Length: 436
Image 1 (cartoon, rainbow, N blue to C red):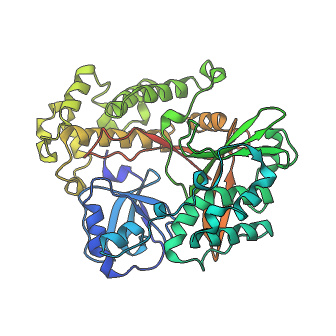
Image 2: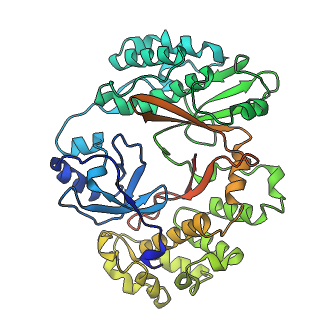
Image 3: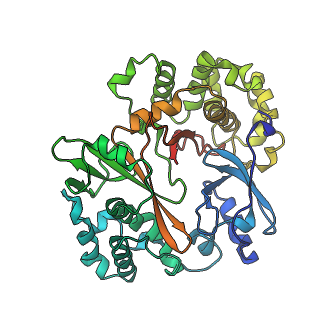
């Protein structure tokens, strides 16, 4: 795929950072799994940089992806995260050091949703911590009917409050009616209630749900209808695995979703290492015109092709050994010729092809209509028992947005997502994102 086949978005975000952080950023870029928040407070998403890059000034740009979209982001717009501060030799209080997660402060039991405010405000675990006392004050502000103040909180607390306390503060905002929730009325009808006063809630010690980051659930005691609560800090948060998109029996025989179900099940049944190979073959079967022309010339991939590519993912190879790929794959390397120097030397020949094909699958499904009902399928699965609450700094406050994916209401953008790396193609399977 030619570089300009990808969607390029320039990230002109935030305010300049200090040049003293340039060595720290280079240190992070040199690592095997770099992830860098973008924006003044990380609210613009997480940049997954292309490998092999280094910067020298804050006016430089880093190429990579945010939410699966190719971007070029100015160094001056990067969020000075704890990781950057620590790489620069500073000291920070990691968000992991605070006992403020739902599993830290709630007992693993069902209780009426109307009790959640008292469970937070009177929580002894929060009362004994400086950060906890601030969270209690934020809960009181929500109870009073306003978004809680956030800009005035100590910088070392903000990430933990947003990502961890935001999980239940968002629930409080939903209960109080202050969260931005455009489809609240329709969602209540789906849940089978007129208000949340009769609903029970549970924050388990460990996630018991397929969507790995779900932190609790609402339950209508009369009907047994349960809604999982997922919480995200910022724009998107960590996308769940595609394997957690469980296809219910009633959709397995659906004519509308036949191709999408087959594609998703193929991807779910594959391993991280062979998922793009099996996935591109399935796209070639259903939507060959959605595939990059150069890639299409080598399809379908045979079992022997896949065996050869996996063998060339061995760590004994480097990216410069790409000519050892079977000759049929050589044209694919031309698709990354302009960016080849930015791939780390630890990238393997098989890893390069893995990366190229993964990117094309994402572009085919997300941008080229390869699976036209993929988003609707995701919505129809998620609308049955899932809502997502986003905790997001808004001006001086911490705001909350609630998303209920729904087919009829056309809510929720469901996209394929990947942290594919030519260095370590065996690390992770493809994910999906749900954004508003």
